[in-house]
Length: 300
Image 1 (spheres, rainbow, N blue to C red):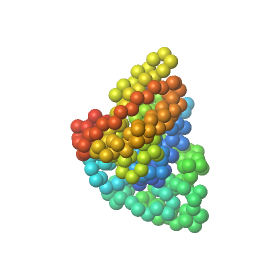
Image 2: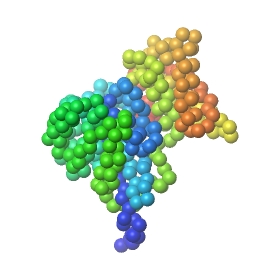
Image 3: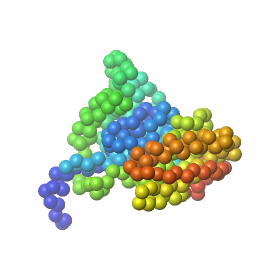
Image 4: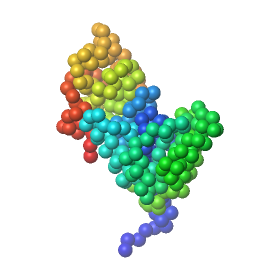
């Protein structure tokens, strides 16, 4: 039998997934818990498309957080892949954070059925308490506690950081004893290219309206680190020629603005000067194209 030293016996580690409907604050919570800006945060729903892991290390613990896409009924293959990330999180997590907004009652019964029969500890997170009365908070707490029978409940404001420390304490108490799953100096399982593509996609969500942001995918085709500058080339894929024209804008002004705001944030993220080249291509119905989706990193 393999010997386990005392340090490993006293060390806790586990996978903690954040689940819930779109736009309830999952990405905001993830970023607060990790202490880094890893997930897209905008006022628009369905901004998270992938399962993004953020790793937090303490002397005697390691928490591997996962931000997952908001639960929805898929309308095309890309959303089917998104829901596969949610299903996987239900299966392989050591702790589930089920997040709702105070006053929210909408739920997907198929997901809740799986949550309720799971033996995984569940922490119910009631978010946006700063915008609710005490009566509304208590009514919401009673509704959701009866629905999912959580192990613990936390009432928070993810945006303001209120009661985030309480969540962490509850997570550490529930973590299984285990050696760390990742090296202690790692922050995430995703590559720098992935975060560059997410930054560009976030700026599109902020700069463009209607269906444009949801019809867009970013591919970083070149990432070259030189001594004083990192040179990045990325392609913005859209589904129709009309969308391409909107992305580019009159005399190229809109894509120039996109390039500028994206570059500034990428420079802040990687802490280095960046040259960012953007081009736009049409890939018809890419959200239903399995091969294209796999190339964009969807699936397992």
